[in-house]
Image (tube, rainbow, N blue to C red; front, side, top):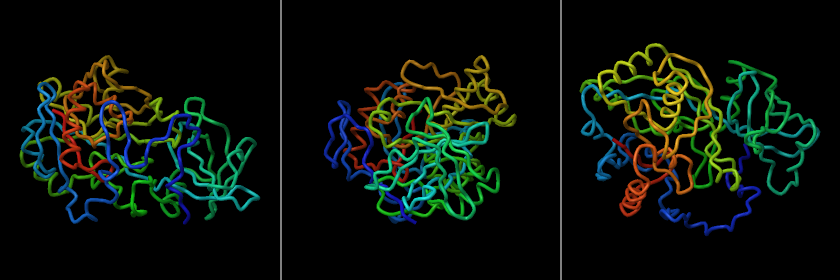
Length: 370
């Protein structure tokens, strides 16, 4: 299957930076610190990656290994996981009546059964304007889609309607799709490397990667130490639209989430009793804070969509702590971290992580903010 992870950003009007480093006024990220393969392919166990621990109040930074995370947690802490399972969200098809290959990256499913997706014609074909008129894309295996219209909120995305739906659609996607792959990865790694061990519900375009390092052994160890857990589901969208201008705007995609009555009850009881609620990933923060915003500060069972944007001035109502990856200088997730801790503390911690040679991205090391 043809994939092209090295497509340059589209429509960029900004001056290009050297490929070896990404820069902001806050910190520099050398390309050598990109995790280009899973921990298991670097000779480590899943839970053997490094963990940077940042204290919210003092800004103090300490370093450990992820399988020692229990040392920083207390009995009664509630860890909230995202149970969404990663889709092989890259499909390659052909424009009807043409040999032109189109790479499609699923972004999110919509309430009416249609999908939003990023469409990437094969480089050098001059096919960027194929979708100005009604288009049909054929992926084989009896699967095709109609390209309907551009998304009004994120114009790099297109609304599509597939010929299959529900379980039949997912079965075909898992048969013919591949995980989304960015240019820093050294190989097209198998889908199993993009799944958290506890993931249940298919739907994320990209892995909710904060939970990747958890092993069953570690989860059992935490349970035996009296650390509680709950699961919600938020289907994560794309982390990049391969367009510098749009990526710099940090537009919040509309993501679907579910919170069960069981999970909502655990969260309410933890909050009422003053115990810490630690989100395993920024997706969990978005879901819980969205639910609280919609329900007057209390998390209740629900099934909704959210475009909530969380940044420095956002008042967190539910979450006290966050386990997350290390985010790029221009990533929107850095804005979210500023709701937990002062930006200068984040950048100081990241500068320390760079000096200590931590690894970035979905297969990299992690940070815990408490």
